[in-house]
Structures are given as C-alpha cells and as structure tokens.
Length: 207
Ligand code: ADP
Ligand code: AMP
Image (tube, rainbow, N blue to C red):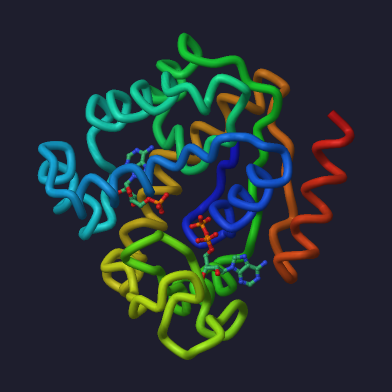
C-alpha cells in the first residue's frame, strides 16, 4: 500500500512496481476518473467532489474498490495506490485484504506543489507525465497514443490547497493507524523517479 500526499509520486512508482512484480495496480483515483469519463452513476456522483479536491464519500469508494479487488488479476497480489484515505476506509480494508507493507511517501510541500503544477495526463490511457521531470517525446502529446495531454482539474491551485488540507485532516490519521500496527515504512520520495524506485526496492527487500 502506498500512502502519502497528492503529488508525492505514488502513482508513478506504483505503475513501475506493478510491472516489475506482475502485480495489479489498484488506484481509486484512476477508477474514479474512469467512471467520470464513462459517465457511470459512480462517476456522476464523484465528479463534483473530485473537481473541488474533496474526498469522494466512503461508501462509493469502498464499493468501487471491493469490485476491483475481486477481479481475477488482483488475486496474485496488488499495489494499492491512493486508498485508504480515511480511517473508515482503513477499517473496511482490514476485512478485504492482508497487507505486506504500507509505504509512506514523504516529500516537502514546495516539491509537492511543483510536481502537481507540472503534472499532465493522457485522457485516453491515463499515462502520467510532468512538463519538466518526465515530458512526452512530442510536447503536449501522449507517447503511446498521440492524444493531447491535459491538466487534471484538481491539479489547479484552488483544488490543490483543498486536497492538502483534506490530506492533513482525514488521511494523516490513517498513517497513525498503520504505524500503531507496526506496518508503516517511511520512504524519502525526493529525487528522480529512478532514485525513488531504488529506495523503494531496498525498503521492500528488507521486508
Ligand atoms: P501521486 O500519485 O502521488 O499523486 P504522481 O505519481 O502522479 O503522484 O506524480 C505527480 C507528478 O510528479 C507527476 O507529474 C509525475 O510525473 C511527477 N513525478 C513523479 N515522481 C517524480 C520524481 N521522482 N521526480 C520528479 N517528478 C516526479
Ligand atoms: P488521486 O488520483 O489519488 O490523486 O485521487 C484523485 C481524487 O479522487 C481525490 O482527490 C478524491 O477526490 C478522489 N479519491 C481517490 N481515492 C479516494 C479515496 N480512497 N477516498 C476518497 N476519495 C478518493
């Protein structure tokens, strides 16, 4: 499980780790954005919360995660990214999965803000870029499918400040929940993507 503030690099590392270890990548943010794009009932209920930078209500997120965790590709193991974000979600997860490790991505706020401001995503495949740290080959276009990249609505400054506050108020207690259970492993999330990946590998090999 990867915990940490928005923009810390959880998704970037989750994609790499899942590929390297043949694990499923379970991101509730990705699930919710896909639901919004498809206009499903979940997406319609979640859209305004996401845009404003607020959390989507627990019952909706839990329903989506329960369905995702039950799919066959998750049976051999998974990386959980962006879930749980509230104590109620953490308690509900106890009945759904057994955790090997909980990694807490740590990064100073000015660096988070820089990563969030420069994040661009492909609306078609969900690939994540950064305007300076990991730009696409052709400016503004996805390497995989050539689609024009976009800024997430919740990466605009108004929503970012809400998300950082929500993280401190609602998600930091989740860190304490796993710390008390001896599962929490802090990770220095600064430096290049490769550096963070190396630190993460070393940390997981120690498990
Ligand atoms: P999270 O999933 O924690 O919100 P992301 O993985 O989407 O974070 O990363 C946020 C932004 O920072 C993205 O634009 C990503 O390309 C970029 N990024 C991720 N890791 C690094 C890194 N180690 N150095 C610089 N930029 C990074
Ligand atoms: P992320 O892609 O993880 O940054 O998530 C983007 C947005 O989706 C968040 O700001 C929330 O609005 C919503 N979201 C993602 N995961 C959760 C969750 N576990 N609980 C509640 N809302 C979530």
